Length: 251
Ligand SMILES: O=C(O)[C@H](O)[C@@H](O)[C@H](O)[C@H](O)COP(=O)(O)O
Image (cartoon, rainbow, N blue to C red):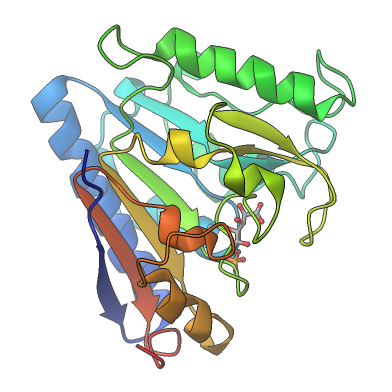
């Protein structure tokens, strides 16, 4: 299965990028729902991921989405107690999710550190992998066919919680892993692996700001090593590199 090379899309500034990406996501979800009756999106944490969700909450076009027929997953999660404001789920709920009529049964947050698996991030990751597998179609075992996987890109080219040189970035068997000693706080996280990410029809890489310029340029290369995780985040049909002008300055 070939994975599409990234297509850069440059926006004048981060605010316009958030609004444009929100409109792009509304269209992608509406297209998936009209084609297949449902849509499956993987959310990301970080400033750009949350800015996209907040922009989506503000656009009247959000009402073209049938929120009850949307399956939401997370690409990664900070392994913190439920409700902790630093959790990606908490920030996504504040930005958008609490304002739209989602079907709670179709929203799949990653476990919290005070949840059923306690402080065991690896057990929590295994449980999320089982949840993904249970939602996967028979002809695509292990992982649902995500329509869009959103991924913020770190200045070190990490995506989700797959950091350069870390074992999780090299994982090829499991779909979800616990991440320990992450360089970006908090140190303990849960993350989809590239096996799961690359099941997506489309992967959208998000980067804004001068501090992402080198990472954005690196993300376009086909080096595909674990030392440049963003190069491995590819969709089966399309990969977008969504940037503002500052992040695009080294392309
Ligand atoms: O848990 C997290 O922090 C995110 O999932 C992480 O992967 C984030 O998307 C990147 O670090 C980019 O973050 P910014 O968009 O804030 O730069």
